[in-house]
Length: 130
Image 1 (cartoon, rainbow, N blue to C red):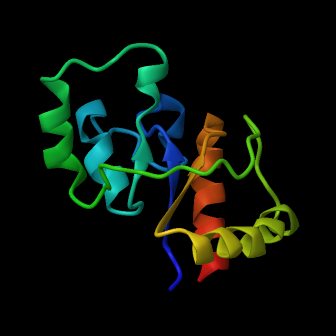
Image 2: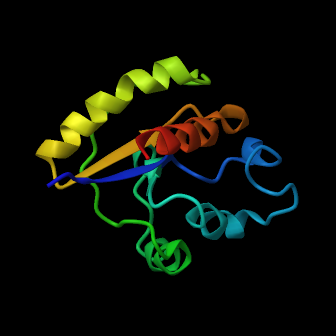
């Protein structure tokens, strides 16, 4: 049985995504709820800098609705500040499907976030995977 494949981004609360993904006037506190309408998970990358205090996590859980709380991550490819073309993303489709045949869940997080590129890449890749 093939794994569930989850496509998302590394983080979600970037001001430079306003206009590219988020409405320009969306409050910072509403970003996770808005993000969860389209993507099924996000990587919490703040732990690279500090561990979030316990009081923050319950509030996040209420806002995220569908976002998975546990993840088996496989790094597919890492390019920062980069917009993939269809050929580049297409090369990863068979690789991800091969991993999915061997795993129960596969999580793909695009981390090239400036100007909403991670969102654009995640959307296109999700369509390619069907």
